[in-house]
Length: 168
Image 1 (tube, rainbow, N blue to C red):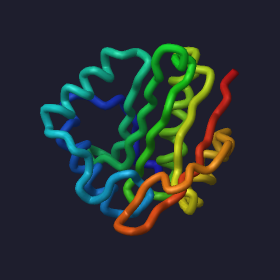
Image 2 (tube, one colour):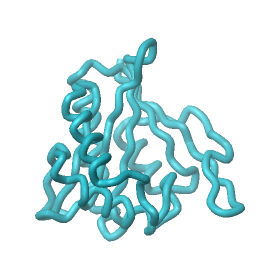
Image 3 (cartoon, rainbow, N blue to C red):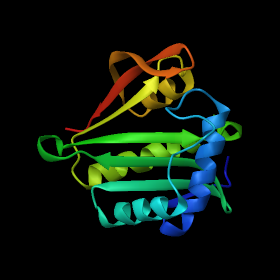
Image 4 (cartoon, rainbow, N blue to C red):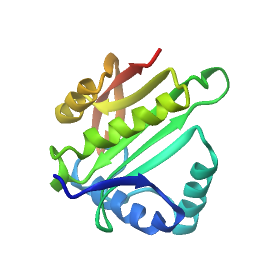
């Protein structure tokens, strides 16, 4: 897909991000939330986005086609004795899977992590989400373990892989 660009999320994106999260949450069982999306009001999301802009150790990027959000990626720095580490979250709408959006977002997030001297970046991914695992391995992440029963949908538990990118 050639017609997308990536930029940092802004407060004005709050409503669109919340709508995107409902859409992407309803399209698969790979995320820790479903079609209900995230439990935030638009005002809470605006405050969250503002705090991300003010915290140089945290960033959220949007992959966009015009005004339409195709993907969201964020990198969050951890605190205190874990301040050398960060965690990534990534989601792409289903009709944009396998079109380079996830790769582009991951590369942008990793580049940001390097620019702030982050040493390790981790993420968790549903164990049967083979496409995402392939993407993460392609950009350098390694599996370090499995978290059993990481989330539960109805009566079904799902294991997640814990993956790390070592930037040292």
